View 1 (cartoon, rainbow, N blue to C red):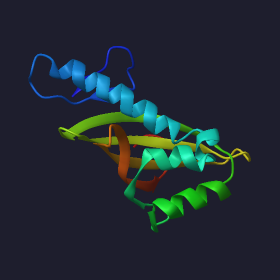
View 2: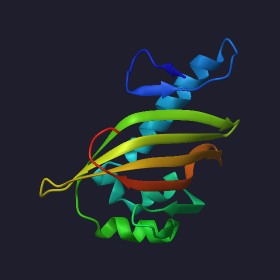
View 3: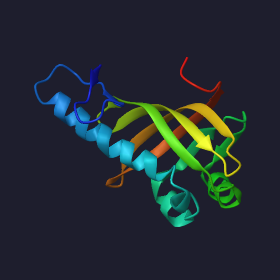
Length: 146
């Protein structure tokens, strides 16, 4: 594991090839930006944009313990409260040529000020000339790093 020089909160995992670190950093920055899009309230309320980021066979194991598919997520995002969602402890681990595992801690700050934290993982796959989330899981946790 390496800490990326431009962002101490970004950790990259790479193979032992001379160019692997740069490729891993580039992939990590790209997937972090896409994952952060899914956390932005204005994107979460845009079903066309979210649909483009989720694979058709997307599945989510929610922090509630429920299982969601793509259509359920698109519907439920329209009904959720507008909250600020922050990302900490981001990691990107390539798992195949066209797949990477993203992990991080999310901090959801509701309009009431209530903070909800979860450990999150997303499996991103490169299909049809774009990155899409194939699988996501959220696990509730206590506030603050463990």
